Every structure is written in structure tokens, then in C-alpha cells.
Image (cartoon, rainbow, N blue to C red):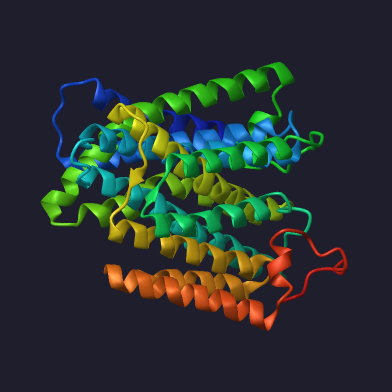
Length: 408
């Protein structure tokens, strides 16, 4: 590595470290800024924290098993989204009247954020990684022996999300089951030995440090990033809602798409960088692992935070609109899972995921969402009819397929 490249990477690290400071300073100062400016400052802080998390987690792969590293990287890159969701769930619990059981605007924002984040990661994140890899290498992305743990757990979590729609709420027993699924997934991922990852950029620079300095740097980056995200998350949500009100934008739509963009962009960027390097399967594997986190840990923990804030153990309530969003998210996720079930993913699934994601954005009404969910379930059934082996491949890899991935 040349001196220029090393200086550039250290400069990038310092720049991202500094990018998180304005949001922290704004929180602890009396400075009054317009809501839109505040959203940009706090959003930049959250993105900076997410990048720092991703770099530190990549370097941590040098010291832990590959499967566990993917799980931890996915957990840490989703932490900004988790903190925002926790803030929303806490506000929802504080606003909820346990006597009348009437739903508030705060409760709707919780469902908006978690469903929007899930669909954004699949429709934009998965598709971009698939297409970038195909256009870079002109061959299918090979995920064999990459997602054998993630795929079954994500499938089970998605099917449980369908149950949430019919229950019109997330029961605390459902939340406990989702959290249990996540813990088992994390435990299974902890097996195996550490491998030398393919690092690039800032992560490669940190990875070249002596072991003691490297581990210290990773720990400090984790703590620094967590501090920035924890400080910026609450005011970011407040200013985002205030900005939406002034612009006449529906709170539900604002929280569903704009908030996840701030937290998901660094994660998608990291996955794209993976897909362009010598270990490309790790990019999509990280995003799939992140979906496991979102469908289990994120949904399950929001019930606990909501109950803690409300002062008693409660089922998280959903109105018909929010329930429809959960059903649509489950249908879209199941369709996406079946598209990649064969584990050799060419350009076509990427185009389909991106096109259907963009298309569904034009149908915001509740009845539209239900029909879109039915359409995605129908597409999933068509995939199974066309190739019935996709269904069992959600739970196990095909041992017969040993040939190299196809060219398209």
C-alpha cells in the first residue's frame, strides 16, 4: 500500500469521525436551527456512526469466526435503525393510554419504520448488490455455503410476520418467539474458526495495525459510533416529524422511507464494496443476515420497549393500515427469498426486485397495499410452480449442485 493511499484512508476515517460531531454539539447546545437543517445534521451523524460500525466490524472478522462475524456485522450495521426504532417504540409506549387502548400517531410510526426498513433493504439493497456484481463480473453471484444458516431463520421469521397481520398486533409471546429465533441464529453462527477476510479501504488500513492496537481501535470505534447514534437518534426523529409537518408530508410515509434511508445507506454501501472485491458473496450475505435481525430482533424488541415505556406488559397494537404494511413486507420478503433460493443469483432477480420495489411505491393506499401483498404472494406461488425445488431450498442447500455458477 502506497503512502498516498494510506494517508487517504486515514483522512477518510478522520473525516467520518468529525462528521458525527456537529449532531452531538447541536444536541448539547442552545443553537436554534431550522428543522430541515437539523435533520441533515443528525442524519449525517447517524450515517457516520453506521460507517464506523461497519469498518470496525469488518476488521473484527480477523479475530472471530466467519459466520459469527457476518452475524455481528449485520447486527452492528443495523444498530442505527435499531436505535431509531427504539426511540419510536418508547415514544409510542409513553403516548399509549392503557385504559382506552386507543392508537396514537406515535404507534403508527413504529410500524412504518420497521416495515419500510425491511422492504428498502430487500428492494434496493439486495438488488443493487446483485446488479453491481453482475455488471462488474458478468456472472451470477455464488451464495452456496454462504447463507445456509440465514435463509431458514429468515424464512421462519417472514412466515411469523404473516401471522402478525391476522392477529392485528404483535403479541408479547410472538415477540418472545422472535427474540428466541434470533438468539438461536446467533448461537449457530458462532461455530467455526476465524478466517482472514478480504478488507479494503479504511478497514484494510486498520487491519494492518498490530493486533493489540487493532483491537483497541475496533473497540474505540464501536463505542464512539454507538455514542453518536444514541445521542442523535431521538432528535433526528423529532426533527424529521417536524419537517414533514411543515412540508405537509404524511408522518407515516416520512418515517417509513426517509428515516431508514439515513440508517440503511452505509450498510448498502458496505455490501456493494464487498460485492466488488474478491469475496463478493459476503455483500449479499450481510444484507440477508441484516434482514434476519430486522424480522426477529427489531420486531421482537419493539414490543418490549413499548411495554416498558407504557408501564405494563402489552401486545403492540396495529390498526388495519399498519397490519397491511406488515403483510406486504412479509409477501415481498418471501418473494425475494424464493428468487435467491437456488443460491446462484444472476441479473434477473436483481432487476425484478428493484422493479417491483419501485412499482409498489406508487400504490400507497391501504387497499392498494393489500392487493400488492396478494400479488407478491401470487408471484411467490408462481416461482414454486415453475420450480418446486425452490421451496425446500429455503431450508437446506442442494447437495447435488456442485457446478460453477451460470454466466447469466
